Image (cartoon, rainbow, N blue to C red):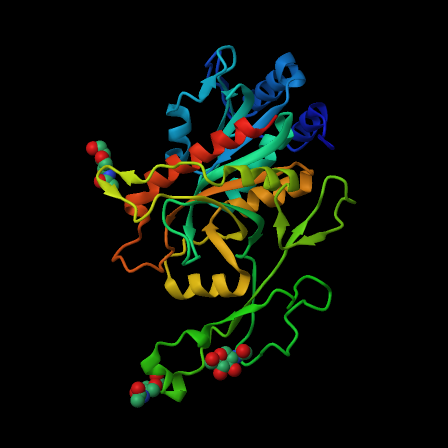
Length: 360
Ligand SMILES: *[C@@H]1O[C@H](CO)[C@@H](O)[C@H](O)[C@H]1NC(C)=O
Ligand SMILES: *[C@@H]1O[C@H](CO)[C@@H](O)[C@H](O)[C@H]1NC(C)=O
Ligand SMILES: *[C@@H]1O[C@H](CO)[C@@H](O)[C@H](O)[C@H]1NC(C)=O
């Protein structure tokens, strides 16, 4: 794959930055601390002939309950000589899925974790492509809980420029003129979300929260000029992977949790867009806003971070997300994820494994 900066370089960077971290190698299971350990971990990785030679599919998953179904399935076979390397508070697991070499890592919740872990994965190991999987809220009323979606584009919709009260779409945003911020991707006007009764009360028709404008991320690609920013809002998944994912449509998925079954058998479908932010959306109005503004289906908290890091590394990636709930748009009294998250997690893994079998 394209530019992968050398581990020796990484090593010197980390020493230079007095990089501190605890590490543990699966085979020796020896615990060590701080600086010494970071050095040891880096050295073990740099000196491991197998890691140098072998390239991997990188599997990235947000949480333990989304990783569990793969670890427990027969599809995942841990590498007997190197089951895992612990580094910087993360566990990188080695093995095979459907006979393909994989390195799998769990990020933890949210954009920061997903970004850090994707960067570590792509910097430490030879990763030919990234397959990201997990569960998501659903913003599309035509799809159901349990369905699995594969969007073509991802965006981080949590980077905002919050406009002062009194200013509107015709007014420049703070720091817009030097290119830090833009009005290109639109905004949310809090006053549009009054409850119907109060709409009649003119003194309440405006909202001091005014508008938030959606901003692209500043990115610094590996083949760009250091410190010269570029911008990215919609990040496409790998074209070939997206085309290949069409073959997943029609596959059979899990439709029941214990004795509770879904209204119809779940489906796999490719969709236009998904978005991520450090926000668990359980709110009908915001769900509807995101759907109508950005035409998104899955709402999650990690995919766009993985996408943005892969974009900067020029590493192909795709995301498979199973819908666990209606993001606040359902009629149920509580979020559907309470019941259906385990079912969705199983379906995401089924589709991931099937996708891996399609890779030649
Ligand atoms: C925000 O929405 C309110 C009510 O819908 C409207 O009166 C106001 O002009 C809008 N403000 C801006 C800045 O778009
Ligand atoms: C309208 O809103 C103001 C300010 O919040 C409040 O004092 C007033 O009672 C409201 N009037 C009605 C009719 O709801
Ligand atoms: C399904 O059954 C398992 C095992 O009995 C239980 O732990 C779990 O809470 C059940 N889930 C639902 C949604 O009823």
